[in-house]
Image 1: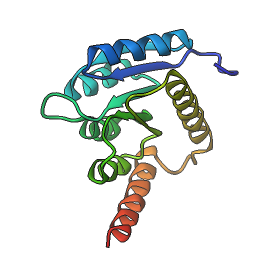
Image 2: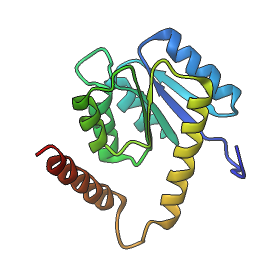
Image 3: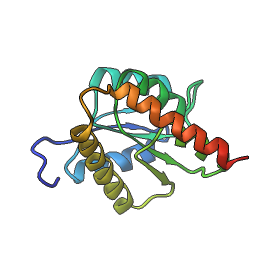
Image 4: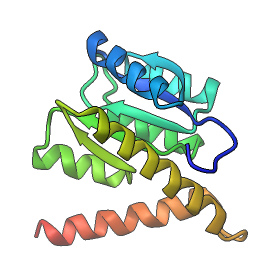
Length: 160
């Protein structure tokens, strides 16, 4: 866990039970606390609001009306919780939709234990560093919206 005194709390959002259990095992054996396993986008939003985890590992394709990307957008409306996407899909449309939510990582399935551990460590470190350096006069919401619009502009220019 490095020099962190507190144990990072992670929410898993994954609708495949075997994958969810695998992630749970990898995270707990690496010393992290799992706040829960959500299987739908709606459940992810509710769990994030209730438990306020330090990080979310979010599958993009979920059963139900709300997919992982939409769930991330809904969560980011009220909480600044970093998200690492987990998906079997790397098509252009999915990547472009995912990019706009400014994820802290993007892991393709099937994954290795070491990939999960490294991505989690990097995301937590980046988030902690960003929290420390965030200026007082700018709210996290304003900053997030600015970053999102920059990413949208970039995607628009890149796809022309």
